Length: 70
Length: 447
Image (cartoon, rainbow over all chains, first blue to last red; front, side, top):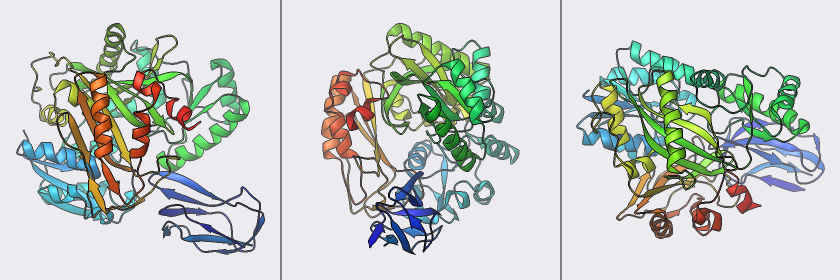
């Protein structure tokens, strides 16, 4: 099980996966937006998304958990 | 001169405009979003009006809210700063229709330069050199491939309505171009609500050089020398200097002449910047685009000319002559460099908003800091990452570099990530120190 965490304070622009989805290493899970820049959050291993903890429009802080992949 | 001015912007530029207006005895009105209530620019204006919540669409880009604030406070003029509504010709027109003074060029001049395709064609017709590129919007990836085979790789893909490097990328082959085209189109629609795309010849070893112009109240257009803006990451400027180490007196005369021609072709009034691509291999300079507003890096021109460009803008908007006599622009003195202190990590340049717990800025002879924040403020993810601009002015480039090293070392920001350590690195970089660099400098530093 791996927690995917935010690298910075940001707004959640797009959520591209849902719980139950199968993902591969390198897939984009969500796209954050901070300071006029889009920041894709990438899966770093193959697995199944067991939980997505953010929704589009949320503001999240550095180190917040975005998703859990198992 | 008008008696009151609303500044439709935020952060360092709002603060900088308010400072000049205050000195000129003009009553100042700030507008702000909920996220910015504690920033210095709100406090330093004579009055401040809350526009709305943090997202720009609900605050700084809300035309009706800005116009309502002007009406409510009896503002006589509006200065848009840069970004946000500054290049929105429809907004400028609404300001004029409301009987207010727009501190900027006419909406017509803004329109003719706002679309990069139309601007290129217009400049070519006026005898200003433009890079090989597409004279019409490129409708799809297939057409982009056809255009590229005519122009020759590499090509730059750009949003016609774009700015700030958003949606822009270089392509070296068909595969890259197909991807770049789709990205540019998506971004163009999202950020500029206009999907038009153009292709232009890309020069890998180029410098980005721009000329500051002023269209005076009597119709004369004057050039105030150049700025070299070749230190870039993600096609966005990080440091700028004037004069450019690459520009000889002959080249300066030629690019200033082209910039004046560009301004004259559209009947330009007020401050504007003509951006050019300078091919270091051939010495050719091509028109890129014109920014119809005050530029972020205007302080380097102020440092070498001794002028206050915001004061000149306000004079022109009020129909008054400039502070200098006729078209006798001041002879530039010495060398100035600006460093954009961004809230971003100094290695990968990714955003790092956060609360500022400590802020110590350098001061002294030849050192200027235009800051948007102070200790106790929080940098939010809603706006651009610019925390402050550090500007140094020396007798020559070497002197300016020496002042910069001390000033960067003395500048202390604790809380958000910031790129000050990158500037220490830049000031130690051989290419930058020699002045012999191009827009690929940061990529080479980060290899």
